[in-house]
Length: 130
Image (cartoon, rainbow, N blue to C red; front, side, top):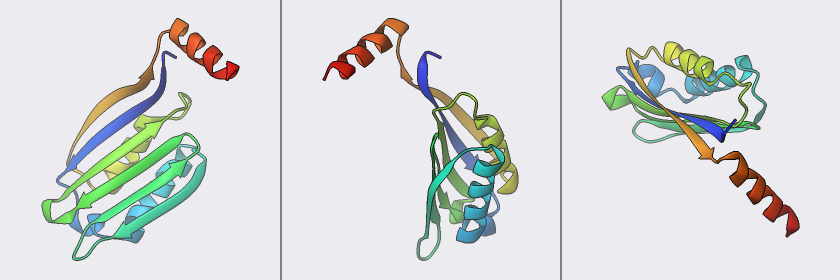
């Protein structure tokens, strides 16, 4: 692995606005996505805004799942960041898209913390000396 993590940025258009404004439903979707992917849940925080919209994060030992919703636009911005190549990020995204009844998702797939093997070894060696 030449990178430390994988970050999926999901644009979710044409979602069910009732789901996008339901804190409990979104929490259930995100916690279930993490559990079904066998991620290790550390903590979860979700907040409903007035008059509408929800933001939330499920912190997992492997990084995080987060969401910000705009029900009035039938839109959600979702991040799935994982630092364990054994965790199936695509499964997590597919589950969230399906459960939120998103008709028009698009995904940007980014590798985070990309280093050559030599760079990684030098950085770790330098850090260990301190």
